[in-house]
Image (cartoon, rainbow, N blue to C red; front, side, top):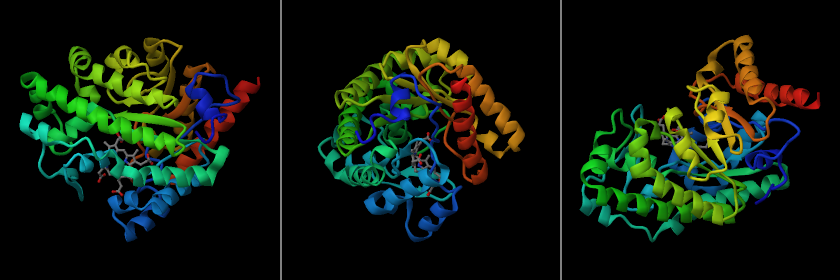
Length: 348
Ligand code: CP3
């Protein structure tokens, strides 16, 4: 850990802080001219694999926005490569996995012995921690087994998750083995980020909302809980984030993650109530509100802070990542507003 006393880390542990910490998912990305300039020189994967460049992208975004945490620049899908699945990003289409996992034999072929080959990510974490020291906490991250499995099986993004659900329903042994292998690789990968200095690990379960509560509990919760427990052995708070997850929240809470990320579809206070107030929450402004005029944006940010009601354990964020084309000035103004407004309220 590099900044254990920071207000972000304290808020993750639901401890009282002087004001609400704020950071944004995808805070380094195409909406930012500095990032676009780096992307003229390198592909996304090249940036991830050059620790000095990845660290620089991470630091530049966090400093430009004045946020309370830096998230390491990497991609969710990097572990696929060390498990033996090649992928690329195609313009307009997003990630494409060249030979998706469809059968029990495909699952059997996946390797779990090369997580150490992702050392370039922990190297970037080390550089960012060295840069910020105790001044700013660093968030490491990994994909949740369900969301990673969905990319592996579907071969890319998906609308109905037909192939992934088909494996769950008709080849449950293969599905469980795939989830087990993912947890083995990802927990080693994330633990290495913690050893390099990451203060908190966020698990992205971006597409978990396509599941019914029953299927989540049966096919996803056990291995996700295992992942959370493995990360907690490394002694850092865990943020577990999903979207479209309103009905899943009580089950997601059962993983034992210290913080649950909420998307914008549920009012923050309602989501928090469903989880119980012992747990911390992160969220949950609709990222599209950053395209609105400042007056509306400010009102909506204020509403989220009002719903959090100054309770310990709120981290301000969006309900999902910043979109390309988002006006940078609004992101900066939002961070400043959350910091100033919540400081005023807690000083009262
Ligand atoms: O938050 C940050 O600033 C850290 C960087 C980060 C990236 N990917 C870099 C990236 C993080 C946290 C991710 C996670 C990620 N990657 C997720 C989970 C987060 C979420 O939004 O739910 C997912 C599903 C992926 C897989 C992925 N990578 C997709 C679907 C895409 C979009 C494809 C596209 O062309 O828009 C990517 C590409 C990607 N990863 C970009 C960035 C900044 C887009 C910019 C680029 O191509 O340079």
